[in-house]
Image 1 (cartoon, helix red, strand yellow):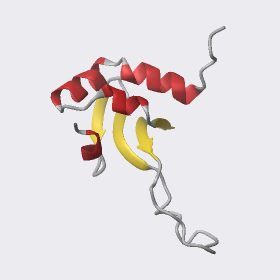
Image 2 (cartoon, helix red, strand yellow):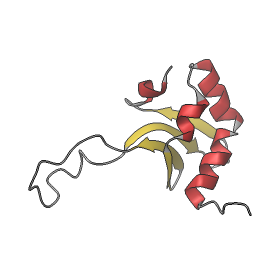
Image 3 (cartoon, rainbow, N blue to C red):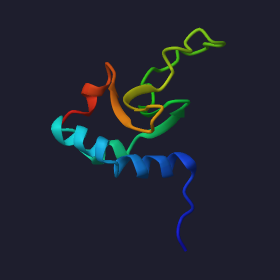
Image 4 (cartoon, rainbow, N blue to C red):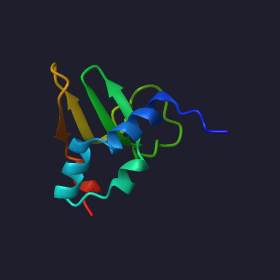
Length: 99
């Protein structure tokens, strides 16, 4: 029996087989296998490969004091234009992907 994929797994599978993503990764020496290990979040006009924050909360911390530090780090974005075309959006964390 096949495993049922959740939406983020399906989106990741589609993006990893998308010519725009494959082309960007090839031209920037990014191993597609690395992207397979990251979650994909969906925003209104964009999909983003993210990695969990490596920030460790100080013992006894409460509330939202460290909210920003604990957010996932955006590694690579795929922007969806009004006409349906896709383009790559890089961030300060994209360099982590480069082999």
